[in-house]
Image 1 (tube, rainbow, N blue to C red):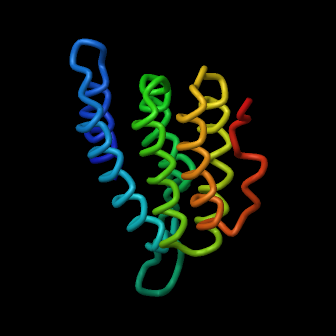
Image 2 (image 1 turned 180 degrees about the vertical axis):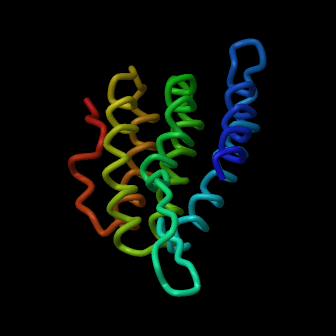
Length: 156
């Protein structure tokens, strides 16, 4: 799981590097990350492994779902923060993860989005960009069954 995420993130980062400037490849990687996380969110994870007599033999510390969200998007958010299409793609990815999973994953995804939106709010966006992002933030809030008012970008 970690290796696949790492490789998709590396490809996305190379695509949005200043010399390359290929946001479509980065967006494609973000969409694949969303698919991976959507599927992972549906798999119950148990850190306990038992022997034939039902005694716990191994306890594995596994990364949390939030850890996987962070590993998937923190660098892309940092290096793609000035590109509306890349940031919108991250919001759309979070919406897909939320709308196709249970309430626990919805809540974790919603909580993680505070980090993404905090970064988005630090950027200087044009009015149309803000409207575009807000439209996707509303859809994301609906997927999480949340109130979107706190997540919207202010439009002057």
